[in-house]
Length: 123
Image 1: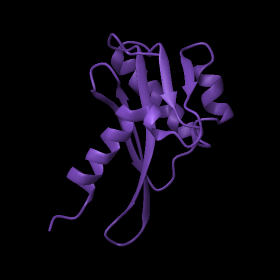
Image 2 (image 1 turned 90 degrees about the vertical axis):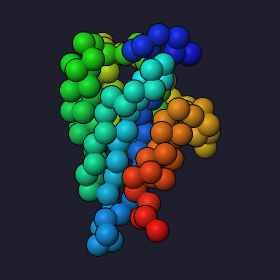
Image 3 (image 1 turned 180 degrees about the vertical axis):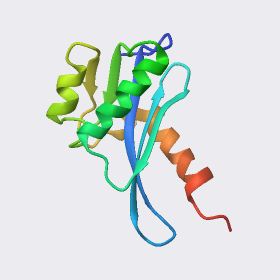
């Protein structure tokens, strides 16, 4: 599906990093593929399917409704029953084939820029 208008396709993915003390953190990022605007960023030590649902509910409310489709990989948070039930009557879910991050290129590019511009230590 091609995002030829705002709120058609939102892409979501995770990025892993660590604090300056070496503690793992997980970052959930979601963007509108048409506008390239970030609609959700959650940073926590652990993010469950239920936490993804909470973030989506807030993002949907802020945008005035859900997108037509959410594009994501097959991570455990995205195939969780909580997310399936939440999206069931609200929005479509499109899963990219395993091992093909280029099929979710907008969010992968966003995550790479996030790492380079915000997460990598300045030298």
